Length: 338
Image (cartoon, rainbow, N blue to C red; front, side, top):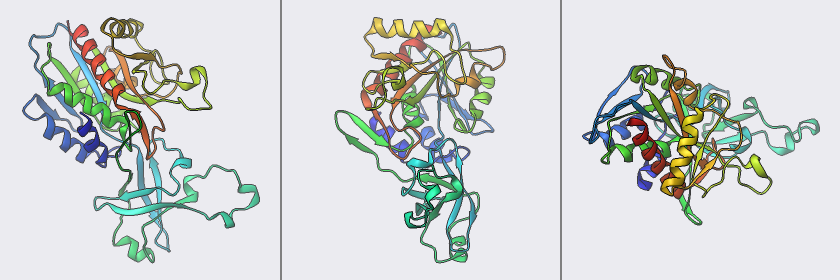
């Protein structure tokens, strides 16, 4: 599974441009399940278990990552852009990026410090203050390499470091995709449906279509969530902690979760010796917000990988937490299916 996470994280796939991620996933699940690709680009897969399920269970992870899109090229050949998804401009200044299908290398630049006015000092830069330098001499030269609407992704090596940590772009939610692939490629006790969804980062759009199509009784969303276990954060502000296992949500900005599923997940983790923890802040959101409102309503559970520096070029998580998430997903899918 670690090798799959590495390969998935290396692929470009901002919201709406998930095709390379989709192709990779299909190459890994083909022959292990039945699957289709819907009009939005979601992969919907059916894995036959040893026994038929009494209830229809949907397990979801999203394929897209945050990034940017080209909106203009100025006279000096610098690229202007808009964000795709929520990206903190403070963490991207000076970072390497790749532009478009050709992977044109670029650097995110900003007005140099000696040109900053006194009243601008300390301001958080806005998109209009930033640009991407691809080394073009002028607009005409840049236009030969880049077009309006080209996607932009962070260039970030996958690194294993410390006591079982990994660092990469797009751990949110390629690690979740790897969990689903790994389950599909294994033997499962009950029939189950899986969705690899598009456009989560810009409004959980793919999940709305996938949930309507599948019409599940229960849904398990496999996600990455903010781990703020850093020096200045105390108590519930830490949200969750790397190394303490799967983070189970009771509420976020998009969903009030089924209390029944929330308590059952924590009870199952305790019973089976799976590391699990509370997500202690009502913050963020994920595909659950669209899934739980689909059709007549779906009882939904989110199980998350604690991830530091989420939505940045350098997301950090612990591999053992991904394994804990997978173990609890499998346990809950089996219990809900029967």
